[in-house]
Image 1 (cartoon, rainbow, N blue to C red):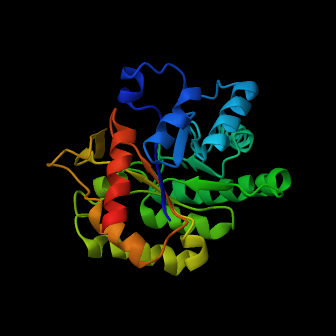
Image 2: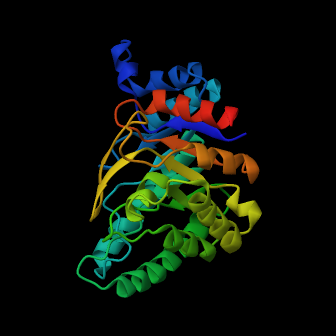
Length: 283
């Protein structure tokens, strides 16, 4: 069965008097959730000792931890020193993932900067190949996945096609399809079952059914402009999409039982994750 969980701590978690993430795993489990995404978005400051503690508690609670690598990774950057730093951010995130006992590491792969899109894509292709060679040397015995994320702004690299195509490169590359981001790039067109079906069919065509079933999903409603993503919203928003019901139906239809869904709603990510799970269970 598809697993659901939040990215980070819900405001209700703090309103109920909880203070540290060590308490979050039991809290989300009590909501009926099975996942928790720990973000290193603004940098990796968590100690190994604390990561060991979190991993132990999460395992005892039956909650799987994924991680999000720092936001400032850019594998399109032509500067060698900058690429080395990006490699370091991903490698350190993977080390923490292993300590957590988790499996999936979400990565932003890059942006165009002052390059053409073709130039940026070529740089990412070259650097991602290089990174996966390092990955094989260091992590060949670990059952972990690097999950490039579909992005929500036009100047970012990461349309769903680009992300899926990059994941053809290596068995340990599995996409993070952020359907809120995808809807921003599609300017609101991701509003029906057939639009979702196009994406999942492309995923399966390129990666095969077995690998496609390991899909990592980010989901939230997101406000967008003509430049793409503006800000995350909650599922209660009625102006911006996308709707989750068509995706839930297709996850059932395609039997994608190994998929994981992380809710990134603003402030109430765990409460909305419960809503997503209920939609999936009841379609």
